[in-house]
Length: 480
Image 1 (cartoon, rainbow, N blue to C red):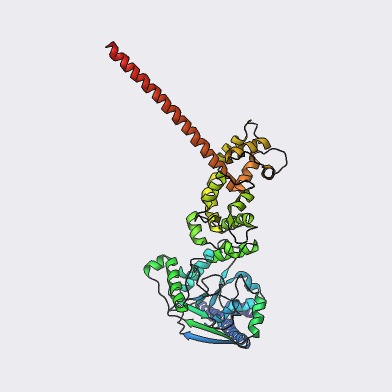
Image 2 (cartoon, helix red, strand yellow):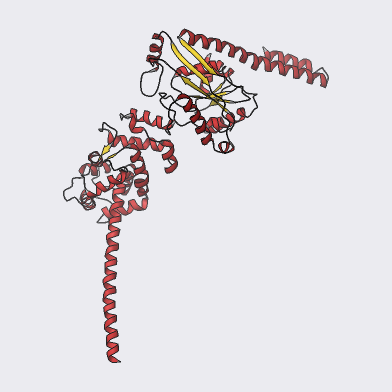
């Protein structure tokens, strides 16, 4: 309807003077803006606020609000923690329906998508590789608009926790370097029916349990805004840490350096039938030191699960390590295991496994090293390794006289040709870097022994030559 009116007005404007046309177009633009933006958004906010309060009221939530929420000009961003349940959405109602970070797909949802659009969300797209960068730029632009945009509400933990501590905050909300108002949430109930994490009741069960209660207490406290220092503006990680410490002190809970990615690893560990504690590593610290990506660590977790599938505690001992490698326990294998076992407790946890594979084993998987190892196996130099050559080499490398390597040989010999080609050898070593380390350890031993032999030959030669020189000098003196 609005479009048709605009079309008719354009026809009539063509007969007016330039000044009159500009004035009328300006009025039309303002009217369009009010009709398409302000009025629906105003109505949606009022309607959604009413429906939201009604929803939580009829579910039996008794909400207590503490502190004072400041304006968008004073603190453009609201940081809410701890995030522990899908019921945390009540803070959006209490805060006056600020903008949130939402997936683009949510806009396509009937009815709900229209409401989300009216809240002017910061949109994130999973299909767009630049989505994260664009989201941070949008948050930065709105946060520095001087109050022209609504406040942005974020849950900086990025995932649900059990409220026993605050995990590392994501930096997105702290990159703009503007004041942030912390908002803490509490559920002071005798029976906890709201906590929804990766380990525990399903959402349907929690909803049923919550509805079964006479009432559910919720406390929402607006803390004083935190203004970043000049150093914190340059380093958002410091600003995030400061805000987290303020919130932790108000909640009376500790902080931990574990991150959202650690929680994802725990979920993945559970999917691999490992104890969830097996995936509990400080991903951020390890990834920064070892230059690891999430997909790489996830792959290492799958490798760890292949070794620890029969281990109930999520830790690997040397017997399980040897069984996985299909090799007997030998001095060489014990030495490799000791390199993994950083704390010397006789077992390897997932953190030690990741560090061991990345630092010790991955560098051994260069083509030059693998080709040298292949040549050691290939004693007759026919570019293939037979079962006898393979057994003989491993017996020598491990120092084991009686060694059955049939299962291991068949695993490497993928085409069942009764011999191993270099491509098969390389593919196996790349997928099982522990073997590559065994090969390189043997190569280093061979080189060391060779160097020792050369040094002994040189010393004996030098000794003989020195004796010859002494004899020559004596004979010279006699001649003199």
